[in-house]
Amino acid sequence: MTTFDILRLESDTIGRYLSLAKARSILPHLITASAAMFIAVQRIPPVTILFFTLLGGACVAAAANTFNSLLDTDIDALMMRTRHRPLPSGSIHRNQALVFGIVIGIAGVFTLGKFVGWIPAALAVLALLYYVVPYTLWLKRKNYWSAIVGSGAGALPPLIGWWAVTSKIEAAPFLLSVIVILWTLPHFWTLAIVRQDDYERAGINNLPLTGAILWITVSSFLLVAFSMLLKLVANLGLFYIMMAIVLGIVFLILVWQLRRNRPQKYFGYLYRYSIFYIGLLFASIIIDKLWF
Image 1 (cartoon, helix red, strand yellow):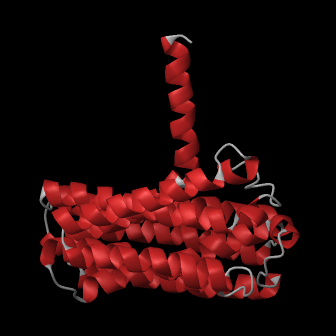
Image 2 (image 1 turned 180 degrees about the vertical axis):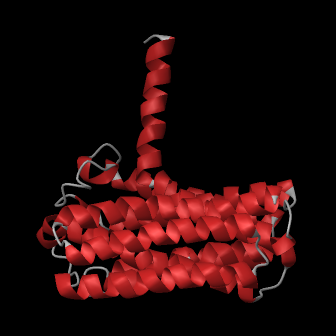
């Protein structure tokens, strides 16, 4: 075996484990935690604390996603969107995935506890357990309101980031958490409509179309409203509020188009935009504190 073959094999292995950990879904957690840290100190947070908070948080989130994949292997195998993931496709054995989840989870908790603080580490463990037990094990397959429960895990990174640099909790990180929860609802429910056949094949209950449209509309308007309120609570500047207004207007235009035109493609438009929305909204917080 040549050096090139070895490198390619290692690259493929790393790629499979990144897929198992759902690396792309971790990025929003890192951005929201970072934004909370920038708001908390009103400037660039200590680089060492920022690095270890994100590193430890990413490891714990990867562990949570791995355990989620282990528990959902059977339904992932039934869905077109997920059947090529490492566990249902067999490219990673379940025992390997279990060991990976345990090791990277412990590594993440230790990193947070040793270099950031044991309160952030405890909050990360809470997020992991919350995502795996109430959401994955209990409600995901039984109730279409499970998206609300699942969103709670994604709401904890702002609290972790805030505590990491202040050792206290104030109103602003809770508002960031509310924004994450409100964003999760239209993000998840639009995906559920786009992939309705997949979810039905896997036996996962979802909101009826009319109910989904109603709650997508309500949560989207609340999302935009709370993003505006954040400007006052977090002492953000003109750059943030301008970005929040533009991003929010586009979001609501897509929601309005979805209400008027119900074919699945409009749900797809909103789903894809929601990914950009949350990243750009929280990135604008960081930019606001860096340069404005």
